[in-house]
Length: 412
Image 1 (cartoon, rainbow, N blue to C red):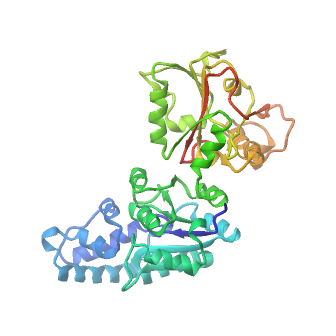
Image 2 (cartoon, one colour):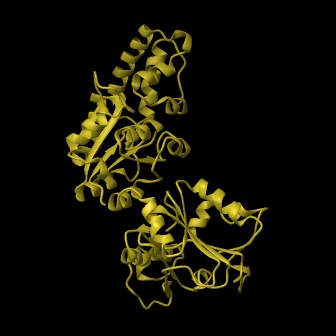
Image 3 (cartoon, one colour):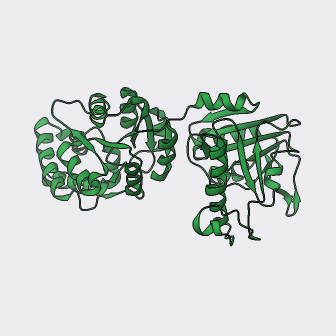
């Protein structure tokens, strides 16, 4: 199910506003004889509206309503003059919004920043890439109350089942949940990933481009995906975060002999170093040229997974895929959410036109795909696509073959 509507938070999600917020707070603080605050102090105090930000920066013993009002007035004056001095869109945001517009996705912004400032920033930086912007308005409760979210959704003509709410804070995740929307947490903003997960994020993304697959396939239907794999005989486990999966994998492999296929996913997860002291681990081989083919557990990623329950891998030397077919007692495929495709054909397409070109470029292969990022079915001697393996079920003589799906983007 494709997503047709997106609601974005502003500060820490679309725009890095921290510098101008800090400068404006300090104008107000210094004007009243208070100590200046750092950008880090500003970062942890941002959220729930500018009045709360200003209040948190005033020394506790001076926090009278009159002082808060005066400092807030000074902040607003300063921010009106400074809000475009250091503020910039995060890398990748404008290309993302352009692609969403081209795809016909309706885009709105909901912020606890006062309404005039929110609208001015969106108009300046994004123009018609955003259809509707709501900031903090009189007589309307601010986030995480769902009132503004639902008003914005109606104005955009959206439906809750085909809408993503995207933000960088626990407040954003709570807002999405209160409005009955799918909550996507971004980790490039003002808050840490664990805060977003604890607040109920349905998925985390680490850069704007990782949002595009979510718009193409919709919110992750974990139960349906689990059923597709388990009906074929695979084991299946889903973890929202890489940290959760890492704990599971190290505990599962502790005390076992383990072999790892070459994998950017495992490199990003911290393997093989994560096994130090607990597991006899081999990276492809016992020693160079002598492959370890019969471990207790073989760990591999995949180039693609289909939501219909297939696993797709392409290989050159084929030692990586061979370990997923015969020899190990157990095989575990570990994949980030970016590897998930709607069906087998799209999984094959991803393996050939996404994963293989990226790996060819990483390995500095002299192939056409390393240049333009798409498969040419070339005859180059450097071609790394020598075999494609599609697991339609676990190999018969393997004790267990399982899928570990992680709700973050990992690897190629």
